[in-house]
Amino acid sequence: MKGGDGMNENVERYLTDDNWRLNNLYCILDKRGRKIKFSMNWAQQELHDNLWYCNIILKARQLGISTYVCMLFLDKCLFNEGITAGIICHKREDSEIMFQRIKFAYDSLDPYIKSKIKATSDSARELSFSNGSTMRVGNSMRGSTLQYLHISEFGKLCAESPDKATEVMTGALNTVATGQFVFIESTAEGKEGYFYDMCQKAQAQKHSKHKLTELDYRFHFFPWWREPAYRLGSPVSCTEDALDYFKSLEGRGITLDPEQKNWYAAVEANQRDNMMREFPSTPEEAWEQSNEGAYYAKNVTTARLEGRIGHVPYDEAVPVNTAWDLGYNDSTSIWWFQLVGKEIHVIDYVEGSGESLAHWLGVVKSKPYVYDKHLAPHDIMAHEYTSGMNRQSSARQMGINFIAVPKAAIVVGIDKARGIFNRCWFDEKKCSSGIKCLENYKKEWDDKHGCWKSQPLHNWASHGADAFRTLASGLVFFGQKETDATNLGKGQRHYRF
Image (cartoon, rainbow, N blue to C red):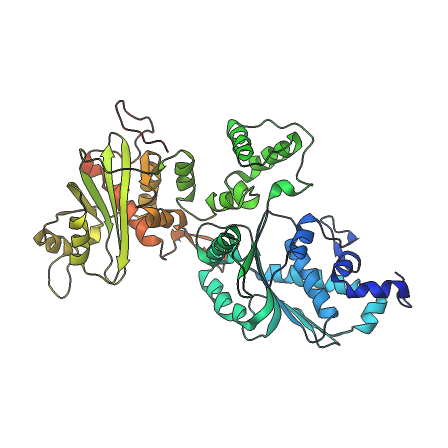
């Protein structure tokens, strides 16, 4: 290819091939700030070869997916008339970086191409071209009409700013008509939010070999171990946990060579709890890893790994207790648990909203359990305006005597709950929605200061987590300490799954 006066005429025939264009026309800056020709790596090429109308992408870090989409969208705008492409980023600074990447690629094009397709306007977030096409980058695309849309790090947006994520779903995604193209990519950020739900649905459709419509999302997953750069020649001492992990991968058909194991062990030493989120080996483990800002996600992950989430049957020889979070115009949540030695067997859970106290007391009575104690938060002693009675008295008249757990600071209660997790065994089926609440109970995100607040976010997960905090704080009424030692007493029952 020549510069200045024009391109070699023999090359022009290749310009109808988007695969050739993407591997030959554009330049980017590498991690060292050097100008290099963009050429698709294995992940980018695989995504390009398997594109669908709607694409959802779960990935390891630093595989260049966003860079690929930037080049693809620029290419579509340059070589097609009247295209509008938009990229939504999680943060303003990310938008600026993404736009500069696109702008650099255009500015570095061969002068012949730029003479044929001129940039007619160039603002801080938008490039318009002489063929009527436009590239936009920002934090929202509401009001635009797009043929191509990319949402970057959507999982993080869902975790930190649920309201903004809803705006993207109801605004930006509705600007793309059926038969146009959507790319949603992110690392995993916990088992909640639009990104998690969309990935789960798309992955299920992929496994079932469901024929996709133009509105269905194709699931793409790119693990760390397929990246050639993620290797380390120098030997690294591996922990027992790392060795067990490598062995578990072999059981799933993933065999790592010594250099891959060295790299993983070295990076894990720095990433620690974030390793599986940032560098997952399988889609499933990406969601299991504790996400930043979550209070109990790591505890739940540990319980799964140790086999403490599975089938935990009701023991008729042991009394059952309940722990509540009572809502007035909000949700009510109830845990059922048995104390077996030092183990806490959590055997049941329900939640709901819009029902009276009498309804929930009826639910408790309908269970085939023999009861001991019923724990409730301190505000059960508050008097209701209509009857003049507190709910403890109302419940007593209906046959259940609540014990009011003393009021304590939320962070104190959270610490107590964390302290009992290593003693808890959960019935996976009956407690599934409650376990999900515990996994997704998290701190509130502070947009202004870009950090997690010290207080929890009040959302759908709060009620199950609050009832579990009632359980932890109420153990004093059984003569037990909240942070008992992990050593189990002799003669206790153990369920292995």
